Length: 175
Image (cartoon, rainbow, N blue to C red):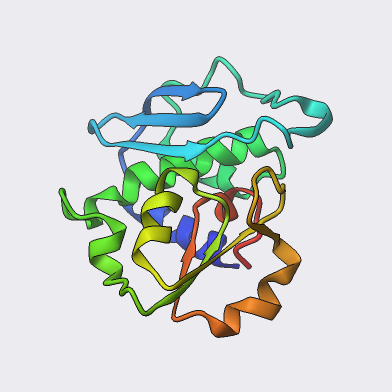
């Protein structure tokens, strides 16, 4: 599993780190590490299920070893998984250059057909203006123009570039 491999990489870099602060919000979950690094992750509010996001270690996250928090990324409890993925993002964010964005890194061109797995609304308008065609695959269809996730097999072969949102790590659809 891709999520498991990324979690293993983060655990290797987590030595000596703890969670300094954790905030599970309505839209996003945030983690601040003891070294000052931070990471965010989407919070599922409509798919938390019967548990409504209840976490068995709620109130005890501050001070938790970062390596233990990373393990939560594999949880079927989506609130726990969000904390785990936010922790992974905090640990691995050192790999990115400040000031660069995905459009610059991916070198997306006007002639490209782009597939987006997961509806990342903040970038959709800009992306639509920049590319020839944009397919957006989403499990929960909430806006005009979104395609169901089961249509990926039909349209992804047409894509020059595929953008996969971090939500796929939380709900385990990356694999």
